Amino acid sequence: MVEKRQNQTQATNRAYVLIDTDEDKAGEIVNNLRYKLGVTLADVINGPYRAIAVVESQDISAMAKTILMGIRRLSGVKDIIVYMTPLENGDAPPMTAAGISEKDG
Image 1 (cartoon, rainbow, N blue to C red):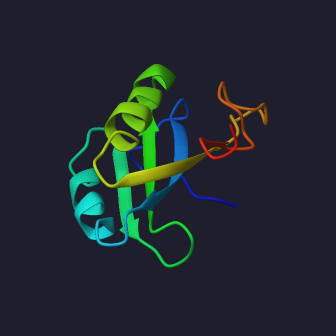
Image 2 (cartoon, rainbow, N blue to C red):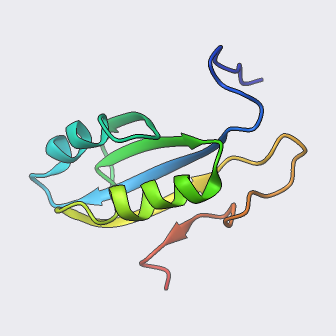
Image 3 (tube, rainbow, N blue to C red):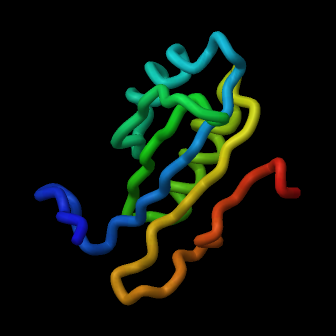
């Protein structure tokens, strides 16, 4: 069972964003993301994607804007994959729960 943080409300939407970056840009991108509104965590990781961010918002439109405008358009970002958590009732979130990647399309 996943515990809720004390400052998190039931209506919070959450997305995990895998970020593929230019080889020398991961640290710079992660440092930039840590100051963006809605980004609650950003770390450099090992693997085919070089960074991960957690984006949270009660407003799904604001969250989508953060992901598409605040993350995807950063210099050095090559691709993203987005995974959304299911809603409290188990329904899929408004965006696909399977993930979104520009490489897929």
